[in-house]
Image (tube, rainbow, N blue to C red; front, side, top):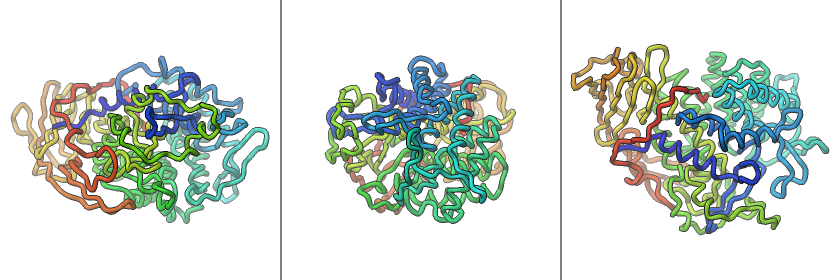
Length: 557
């Protein structure tokens, strides 16, 4: 048996990103979808603009590279043009006055800018076009100009949003959306841009905002106690990226401590709550794919630069909830009954007919990801769980690239296989077979020294490595089997037992039992809701034949 290849799922993700959008408004993505309507109803929202659109541009750029397709052409170029058109003269991304936004143009220092900066960074990284660098740095400068810097070494914002006519709004006191973390979502894109370019103002601004969030949460001790998970997990990716940039041991330790606290709120396979300890409806009982993407990126940063054992987490996330929470069919929409609140679908409240009801949107969602996904099913059939949100569609697409890129990486003449997932790499083709006995078939294309990570569920001596049927003597080096030098045409076969195990995991929604085979979930219960996630149907018998090989790869972190 085989799990689907990430390249297969990338094609589906591209479909969603390019179809689930308002083509009369420059392909701005619909943000919320009421899946209980037949056909489904989608609406634009404040988050459709610099936030959602920027995330789409970022993810599409990465997936085009992954699939070996042209970057920023066709519909992608239209979306990039729309993203640029939202910029004001000062460089900020603005949300235009619309019935579903505000009566006047406004901007937010974090979310509208973070998606915008993600998009421009990936475009510059992929194309080398200096115009994208200019736009990114103008955007960073404009965000810096909105920031209030304090003598104590932190920066903050005096309100939630800003308009040209009235300046700053007041501040929300919502404990579920603490301003110091809700407003610092841009720290990860800033650190990512600094790591790519060395642009010091990005580093300085990110530092000041990280300091604000830590200061406001007792140095980080109160993070992940309550509130929006994605805001806080995004902050951890920024801290770990800063650790990588500066080789700062204290940042690695802080990032690891926060990651482990966040990890304790979810499951081993990658389910993490949208909200932490939120009694409002089902907000803490459902999962946002944005949270999974953050946690995957944190695990990768820790594994690559601090402790390789965290590859185990990344592999479990990639093989289980990342695949299982992608929308690959839509028949189950008809089983959903609990209505999504009207206030989320603001076009209805205004009565302006701006929400879209078209049969094509049922299919447009194929390739998207759970916005409020259930623990053992796609939806708990509750109000929020029956709605899709676009940030998750783009985040899941980005996570596909994350896992694909880092599954096999090379440094000099060393090829390291980090994750047991299918991967076409310029130096080797890698196919993984699932079953009581796991098998890794590696067809070598270029001469390399080969290293294969030892899975967490076996010991080195339990693994058999052969080349052309002959055993290879391998050394156990820091959690990897070193197979030595291999040549083009060599077929390396790694065989290992995939030991069955059961985990009982207690999380906010309840107690759930998972049946595992190696790092793959076979079954989970109780099944509460619609469209079970872990069924035999998610495996395929034939060897995946839609695996891409891109010669141009861009590190997403």
